[in-house]
Length: 545
Image (cartoon, rainbow, N blue to C red):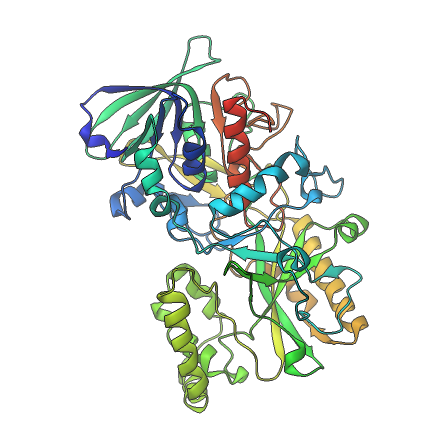
């Protein structure tokens, strides 16, 4: 059942076999897999059924450098369904190399390998409603597909790996009926966990203190407790409860991703020799290919993981002559603030730029109108939404959109402040940092891609090497990818949870989600977070795969 905390009496006590804190994709996955067989499951969600200003305000905090990281309440949703209510749906697995201890990536290495996670990717992909876990063009399609770039054979890059896209699925809405009818399952809304209480000996959690913004108070006692609150909020609760202070590992190694758009790729062949759009699998799932840096090249060159996609020319520059891109630029004030930065380049707009964009729209009116129809039909009204804006440049000329691994750094962290929220909990300050390893990864990968394209004879990639660091931080820490603040490891001095996601030194407290990732890979975290949740659920049920 799903109900509001206000339906409970004040100073209530709920008892359960398992308590899950957080009703986002990870928390809902755990609830679905653990419910039944006589288990009593309680899921605590701090928000309500929709977006609420006062609940969302609990996420507010400080940023050490606003030029590098968005405010902590951005890209997160404190509500039932969590950030799956607003995500883009991009899914791809981690690579085997991501789990390895690599000497050129300090603090890398997981206590498990890809083989421990891979069996769960299939079910995770289905839960995210992205079809089969087929992430290469050969595995996803029965017959041959047109090349991404005709004639391209890369020594350092492949073009056959896929990103698959969810609907995108709102986990709260999609699985509401299953949660409402599951045996022994209770989902409590507006139930904010404010502290974790331990036994006198300290090795066991005896309860969670819970409050609502309307004054309801209570406690939940459970045999096992799982924090599935996201990378920032998990660290906040652990720190506020005094957990992790002994070894100072909680909140450290905070990662997002390194992303940006750079350069010009000019292909020499005809326009139909380049494919920058989406492939559609037999089950209707959108898939897209990209450049992916080969693992052997990463090892040989000492680089982190890196992928890149063919991207339309820079939107703010009207010289692209595309009415579609100019229409997006002119409508940029209608776009949410966090995404609006991608429609600006820091240069003054002025009347001349506005007129140039308006001229593009007028001269390219049929294509612009057709795009608006496509946007309405295939994205705004469609149940499975077209994932993003894809434009065929007139001159067969693209920019490069890259997404790179962010290396773990103990000085990149989140800490508590003296300021408190409406529930009396200390707010967070984020101090997100990137370093020489990250710059080397992007600089090295771009140079290798330039060489691969030139050697293949398919075109030319021009970019300014001196502008790499500026471009890789233009959009700040990437979106809602909050990774690594409660990392997994065998050494309690430098990690928070063990290989089974149990907090070191506590016999019944677990952490689920991207917070436990020791490294960030090139991949968006949702698919692997859901896969690890499935693995944790199986571990807690005691059923070997």
